[in-house]
Length: 218
Image (cartoon, rainbow, N blue to C red; front, side):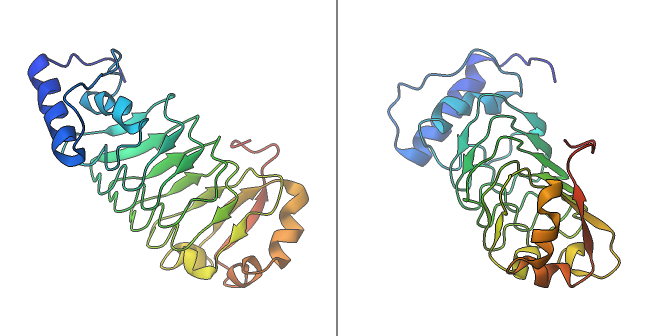
């Protein structure tokens, strides 16, 4: 996505919105590169911990940003107009960070290494693909109501903890014969099939573990 020119009036409106929601001072600094539209003007605030920084009516579409390493709780809450999100350097996120994004079909976080996945993609009803990098845990309702989920990528060299089958509630992963896939390191496939909570989920017959090595997601 190319750069978009953002006029002073738009920036003033964005600044006023942040101040109204957070009580921040009137001295707000915005980055000069607006590669994803007005929303990138929020990044300076997001990196200082402003919650809900990306919520609102500004269109995100296919959102890509290399700078974000952490996002706060509710950061992208209800962004129905975001169709995909790729954050190559995201490592951590707050609760409900991407939930209720009804238009979201793809999330790619290859560097993610946190266990903070609670309600992460809850009710992303059109989500098909999630790359959670080196996530340590799939917490409560992380993928619940992702009704079209087909592929999950887990890159960790150690077993990712699963809070319970309910993490995948109302997804094809719990419906026999759905043909879904979870990509993990090949040395862990047998362990996943026998691990606590994973074995119960695997028993539904809705998905198969696939070797990450040599795949298109490696």
